[in-house]
Each structure stands twice: as structure tokens, then as C-alpha cells.
Length: 296
View (cartoon, one colour):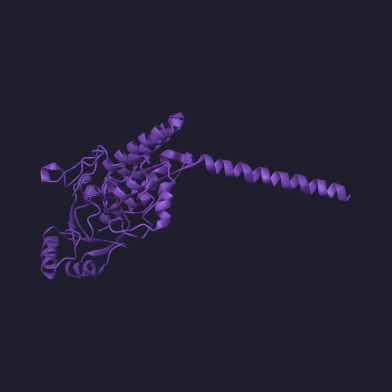
């Protein structure tokens, strides 16, 4: 009886160790890639599926324009199979040179490659290329707020994963095709929501929707000027411009102070609406922004 119990316990222990061993092997088979912001994680997970785990460097609620990573995060980047940068956002401008220097063998893929950037570029007297030809100094980095930007990002994510893992190319291409269909459906939903909108202007503190406005023939009026708080005179001027454009909404983001946005909303009679362009769920947030604009 005792021998039977011991035998059963031994078999149970072997089963447990086997399960743990298999689980560990599966984790080892999944490689890690690092990205800067949450929307990139959305696109990367859609294309990479279960073959890549995505490490986001800038935590939710923090501004990727000013965030400084902690040592633990730099170590996680160093253990990654690759870094997928969004292009030229503040964090990357401040830290990518350091990341490259400390990890010379780390592949870095620029997800903005091939994007027609707004602002910056040689025509503005800026150098638009780094060592990889994709830095775009002075350009607006918020390409994920654009339908075309989303397509560019998806294509560059596909190229990155195929480069890192050629044997699973068919899987990544299949996932990419589904993602492109999702982006098209999102575009159609936004176009439908915005079609009857009479007021084509909106106010926003930080200019995170430049490409969104470009896609859908909207006018973005920004409270922030060159990354700085506006002066009282600039606030008065913006108030007048907003009235002339018949703006009806002021967008605010959790990463930025809302004081000046609240002043503008009071003076113009606009609705104050909190948005999160850095949200993980890209289609949901883009459609939510469109719904806010259509709800006049």
C-alpha cells in the first residue's frame, strides 16, 4: 500500500517536472523584441503572433517625448532579439545612440522607413537621415495616428520579423494580411463617422494627431508651441483662431497638464475630451477619437 502510494507520488512528480520543463522550453522558444510605445506592441503582436514577446520601454501614462529608462529596462533591451523604433520620437532621439553603442550587435528596425514625414526633412534645412537613412530630425513622430502610417508600420514590422525568423515567413505574412484588413476596416469606420461632421477643426494640447488630421481633412490647432507652454498672448490668439475655425472640441492627454486646455475650453465653449493616442488598442482609440469629433 505504501509502495503504491510512493509510486503514484513519484509518477506525479515526474509529470510535474516534465510540464515545467516543456513550459520553460516554450518560453525560451519565444524571442523578445523591444519597442518604444504601446501602439507598436499592438502591431508587433498582431504580426508576430506567439513567436515574439514584445517589451515596451515607455510605460503607459509616461510621455515618450521625455521619458528616461531605468537600468533594468536597458538590460531588457540588451537581451532583446531586436529593437523596433517608431522613428524619431523624443525618447529615441535621446537614447538610441546610447542603446546602439551599448548593444552593437542588436538589430534596430525603423518602423517609419518609407513614411512621408510631416515637418523636418531637407526642405526645412534639417538633415533627414541618420546612419540608417531614417532619422528625420525635426519631423512629427506621431505616425501611428495615421492610417497610412499604420500601414507603413505594419509592413516594416513584417519585414523585421521575416528578417529575424525567415522560416516562419508564411505565418507572419498571413498575420500581416489580417492586420491590413483590420486597418482598412478602421479607416472605413472613421471615414463614415467623420463624413457628416461640419466643424473640421479641433484643439489639442500636444500635436499628437497631425497625421490623423492630414488623412481626414481636419485642422489641428495646438496649445503647446515647440514643446513649450503657451504665453497668455498665445492663448488669446489660439482662442480667436479656434472661434474662427468653429472648433467644438479640445482634446487632452494624460501625459500633459490640462490647465491651459481647460482655459481654452471655457473661453471657446468647446467640450473637453480626454484621449489616449498612446493606447495599446490602436483601432479602438482611433475610432473613439473619430466618435468624439462626430458627437457635436
